[in-house]
Length: 209
Image 1 (cartoon, rainbow, N blue to C red):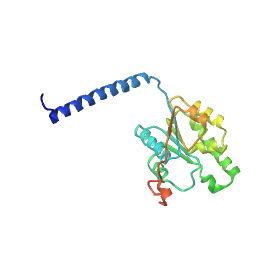
Image 2: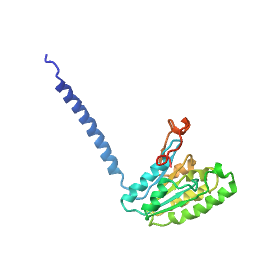
Image 3: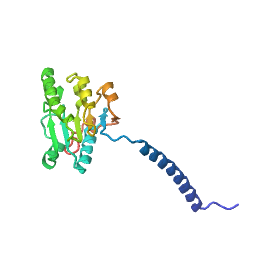
Image 4: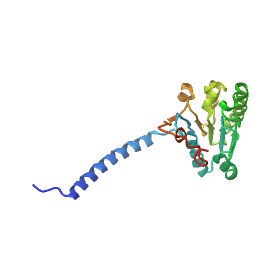
C-alpha cells in the first residue's frame, strides 16, 4: 500500500476545487443567459446600518465612469456641505444636485414646515423622473418622507414606475414601507452590527460626511 504524499493531497484539493468552480460557473452562466430584459432598475437601500447613502454614491461614481447624466436629490439632510456634495459640485457638471436643506426633522421640530419643504423638493424630483436624459437618479433619505406622511406614497411610487424605461433610480433610508419595497426591483438591507458613534466616537470628516 503506497503512502500518500503531500502532492497527492494537493491534487485532490485542486480537483475538488475545479469541480466546485465548474458547477458555480454553469449556474452563473445560466443566470446571465436568463436575464434578457434590457431596462433601467429601481433599487432600495434600507436598514438600520451605516452605508446606505455611501453605497448610492458609489453607484454615482460608477455611472460617471460611463459619462451618464445623473440627478441627486437629498431629503432630510441639512445645510452643511458634505464631502460628496463638494466633490460633485466642483468636479461633475453632469450631475444635478439638489438638497432639501431644512435639516433633520428632530432639529426643525416643525411638521408643517417640513411637509412644505418635502413637497417643494418632490416638485424638483418629478421632472427628473420624467426626463429620459437622466440615466441615474438618487433619492437620498426619501423613505423618511413616506414614513412621516410628508409625501403621498401612492403618488411617489406611481411616478417612479412611470419614469423613462432606460432610467434607473436609487432610494435610500430606513424603512419606507411594504408598498415601496414591493414596487422596487432590488431591495438591500444594511444591518448594523456595531457603530462607532454609540461608543462615543465623533462623526469623521471624509468618512461619515
